Amino acid sequence: MEVGGQKNKNRTWILFNFIIIMNYIGSAFMQQFKTEPTDIRVNVGESANLYCQSQELTDGQTLGWMRDQERITKNTMLLVDLNHLRVRLDSYGYILAFNVTRPSDANRYACAIFEEGTVYPIYKSEYAELEVWQKPSLNYPECSSSSKDYRFIEGSRVILNCIAEFLMPSVTLQWLYNGEPVDFGSINVNNDLEFVQSRFSFEVTKIHNLAEFTCRLTTEFDTNIVQICTAGPLEIDFLPTVHIEPVFATAGDQIYMFCNSTGNPEPFIHTWHFEPDIEQELYDIDHSGRTLRLYSPRTRMNGTIIECVAYNTAGYAKDQSILIVQGIDPPEDEFKRNGKVTPVESGNDDNFSSIETNTVAIIFLIVGIFSVIIVFFAVIPVCFRPACREVMDVNGHKIPQPDVYFEPKDRVLPPVPSEEQYASWRRSVAVQVSDTGGDLDSTYAEVMEEIEDKELSIIYSRKSIYI
Image 1 (cartoon, rainbow, N blue to C red):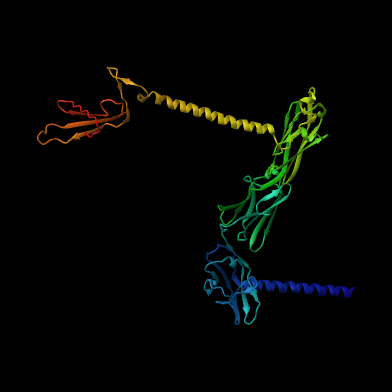
Image 2: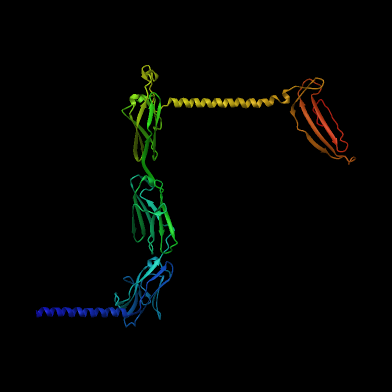
C-alpha cells in the first residue's frame, strides 16, 4: 500500500511541475510582444500594413515576419522576392507594408523573435488574417449543359453547369427558373483554388421545352453587383400525342378519319391498323398519312377498331376509335364494277386531283371573261370619238376630221421700233386632215390679236407652211 501511494504522489508532482512550466512558457510568449498584429481586410490593389511591438531584444536575437509557417523577413531585410512588400522598424513598431495588395497576399501573418542561426522562432505572436477582396470579372458566370446544343429527350437527366472564379470573398451562385429560385432537382456546389461550380440536375419533361434557366452571381464585395448567364432554351424531344375522333358512318357513304398528332419534333410517320382487317381496296390514305378515307363503309365493318400510330425521334404513340356503321348496305352494283371492287392506289386521291384540275379550268375561264370585258369597254370610247362619226357642213358636204392634232402654241412678238405702243400676240393652231379630195389638203389658221383693237386675221393655205 505504501509503495502504491508513493507512486501516486510522484505522478502528481510531475503533473504539477509540467503545468507550471507551460504557464511560464505561455506567459513568456505573451509578454514578449507589447502589440499583436490584427486582422485586416482590403480590396485588391489597395495598401495594407501589419504592426507589432516586441520587448527589448537581447544579444543575438532578431525580429521577423512569418507568412503561415514561412519566415519572410529578418529585421528590415526581405527574405522573399516580393518587390511590392516593404519592412521597417521604427518607433511605431515592426511594420510589414504592402504597397499594392495582390490576391496571393491573402494569408495569415505573425510577428516572431529568432535566435541567431536558428530556423524556428523562440517567441511568436498570434496570427493575423490578411483578406484581399476581389471584384468578380464581367466574364463570369459561365453557363453550359451536358448537351452542347441543349437538346434532350423527355425523361432523360439534364445537367446544367454554372462556374465563376474562386475569389475572396467567395461568390454565391444561384439557379433561377422563371425568375424564381429552382425548387426541384438537385444542386451541388464545388469550390477549388480556381473556380466555384454550381451543378443543377433534374429529370426533364415536355413542359421544359424552350425553357431557360438563369444562374445568378452575387458577392459581398458589393451587394449591388448582380451578374447572370442563361442556359437554354432547352429543346425537348417528347413523345407524340395522338387523338382520333369517334366516327359514325352511314352504310355506303364515304367518310374521312383524321389522326390528330402533335409532338417535338413533329411526328413524321403515321400508320393505320384495323381489327378486324379491312381490304386495302376499300380505303385510301393521303400522302401525309394523317387522313384515312373509307370509300363505302358496310354494316359488316360495324365495331371495327381503327388505330393510328404516330412516330418521331422520341418514340411513338397511338390512339384507337371504334367505327360505328348505321343504315342499310346499298346494292353491290353501286360500288362494284364487273363483279370486282374498283381498286384505288393508297395515297392517290382521284377526287382531289379532279377538283384541282377543275379549279385550274375555272381560273382560266374567269380570266378569259374579264379579258373580253376589258377589251369591250376599251373599244366603246374609241367608237364614240369624232373620227368614228361623219360631220356635215350647212350645205350637206362632209367635213374631213383631223387624224393628228397639234397643240396650240402662243408667242408674243417683239415690239416694232416705229410702233412701240403696240404689243402683238399670236396663237398658232394647226390640224392635219385626211385627203378626201376636197379643195384644201391642209388648213392653217393664225389668229393675231392686238391688245387694243383686237383685230382678227385668218389665213388659209393648201399646203403645210409655217406661219
